[in-house]
Length: 198
Ligand SMILES: C[S@@+](CC[C@H](N)C(=O)[O-])C[C@H]1O[C@@H](n2cnc3c(N)ncnc32)[C@H](O)[C@@H]1O
Image (cartoon, rainbow, N blue to C red):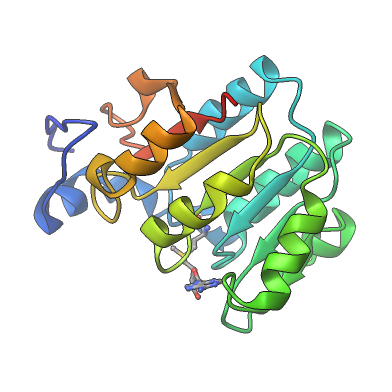
């Protein structure tokens, strides 16, 4: 795999994105991944270090492979079951039922979705922006999250970068966490993590 240097606060081209993410296109329990395996390790460490977190919301279910990993985290850590949204109808992995994963087949910005999201927010959570408009997801949902929550932007530097969220970061005094893992080789998780500090 070609090693490329990525500025965690900048943007990258389509070619750089392709080169960096060749290792993403694997599968987890038979479901195609649109992310790096190494992201599981980063999320696991973040949950170990942030015991205030009691639930996870994912925007963009896709094939459901990341959802299964997140659902396992919720189940094992006795969180609220994973809440995951996709605007498209999906064939759900069998594990969704076992892990009590709540799949919402709706636009995450619809009135009904916002109501469901708000009713989940009775404690700090991990909120993953991985739908079709990460900039809008980040800037819409970050202000709703309580202190101690962590908001995550996937496809960082490619679909969303610092310029897209800087006003929200400043206004909410978001603190970057695990920065050294955002854009590093060999895994290039291309994902940023921000803690809500107030
Ligand atoms: C990149 S895929 C998600 C990948 C998945 N999280 C994973 O890592 O395996 C993005 C998904 O977001 C969904 N999506 C796009 N716009 C959406 C919206 N407004 N609300 C909910 N889901 C949306 C798409 O249908 C697509 O399945």
